[in-house]
Image 1: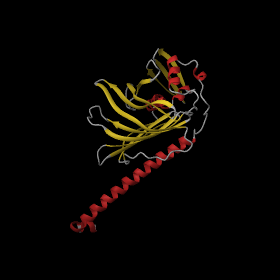
Image 2: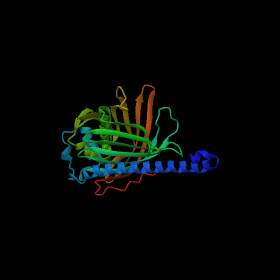
Image 3: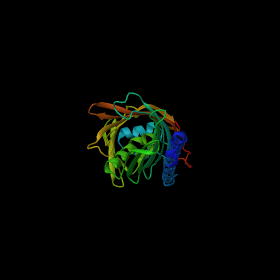
Image 4: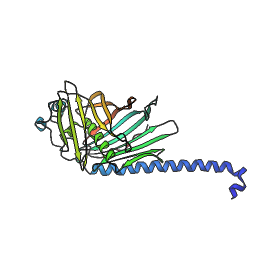
Amino acid sequence: MLILNYWSDAKFGTIANIIILIAIIIGYSSFNFKQKVKTEKISLFEGAQAKNQDIITDGEWIGLPPIVQKWLTKSGLIGKQRVSNVYLVQKLQLKLKPEQANWNKGMTEQYFTVDPPAFNWNIKTEMNPLLNIVGRDKFVDGKGEMIIKLLSLIPVAGANNNEKVNQATLQRYLAEIVWFPSAALSKYIKWETIDDYSARATMEFKGTKGAGVFHFDQNGNFEKFVAMRYQDSNAIKPTEWTVISTRTEERNGIKIPIECEASWKLEKGKWTWLKLKITDIQHNVEEMPVANYHL
């Protein structure tokens, strides 16, 4: 009542206080979101660290499609330790809508485990100098979950406990084993020859099942992964989703794609919505790295 009665004098201080309050709320929301992701990652990391790191031999992939055997050999796995967990950092460029002209920049961190198969991925991207979006995808216990928030505060999208989301996140995990190829030997993945240069991988874990086709060149280098995948929980039917390797290099003694593009095949045409570059990748980490994904 005093503020209203003396509004001509009090309005400037009140406006300043409101601005400060908004900044505090946004700051707390950002802190709270990061703590949530950190807790999830610690749980994921502790659940599968330093497991089954036997030295890999070529005899382990006898019976797999010939082109998959060639890929695993070409990747340099023979004589290396089997990977049980992975930490990586990526720089991203995103187009959130098919009609978007300019790319949004982003940074991500991701943790994987192989047995059990799981991942936790978090992103920070700028819409403009004043607005940023944070998000987290995860695949744990055969279930997928997605959270996207504006300014770490306002929910923009979210989905969990949904069969379409579960399958889509499993298929994403399947596509991303190219960053730790020894996961192709997982007991949860079955391989089938399609032709001389491609093979279908079908993965099933805790009631969730998905598949995709891996394509390679004649030398056994990974070229692309293609799957019929749900775009979101509201999708009526799956859409063709493709991940293409645009640059391959050796990291930790293993040859992997370090730059990729992802696209959806829409009725109106191809929508390339993601370009990524791996800036750091660590296999079989003994201590969870400190998060640092500032733009």
